[in-house]
Length: 274
Image (cartoon, rainbow, N blue to C red):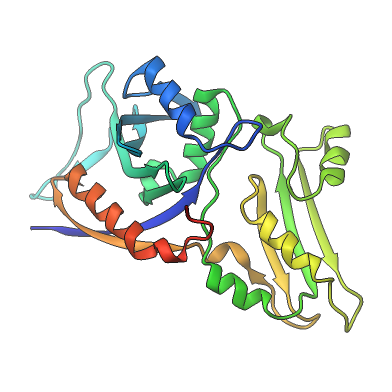
């Protein structure tokens, strides 16, 4: 019996200009396409959301990367051979997830080979033809510990996704308008207090607004002019599950059970949970 451990991340969902949860969009997509949504090419890689099923107010699903190329394997006798694929067949790399409508939380089995939440976000924006954001739930206790002190400097980069061309920036409308007016897709910002001073308390609220904003990259703070920068994207809320493998992958039902258990363990650490 082979046991494998997977990390688990948690994410909120935002859909459309009004910033509503993604439940209605998922339902419309399933009604239009069935349980397996369309295959989408993203950066020359093919992705698909599959096996979508709604049980009560909880969705089960699979996010997959589909590969046309056939990998090689090494047999027990140490000889290498190529896996043969028939026309139209693809190798699939996948991860499973739960989406809980009542709390608007995705519980995500991490499998880097299948693509992460950022790819799923791009995929859904394409399929639903609307703005979609799946920001990670951060470790609030760690964030609050960092922000308990004064903030001397705030650094971040912002890459405006094409799918957000008409979506107002949550962190600073003026800066967004400036970028938009000159068709800029990427900008870097440094906000620094005078030497020996600190940024206003409003800077901490800005940090909290920046964390879930799609397109924000490399968010860092410095507490003094001489301290090392602290990466604020390094502490997402996470858990881990252990499941028995059946061949290359575990049984889906066991993964869903473990994802539900992970949500139960972390629910008190998820802010604004309904």
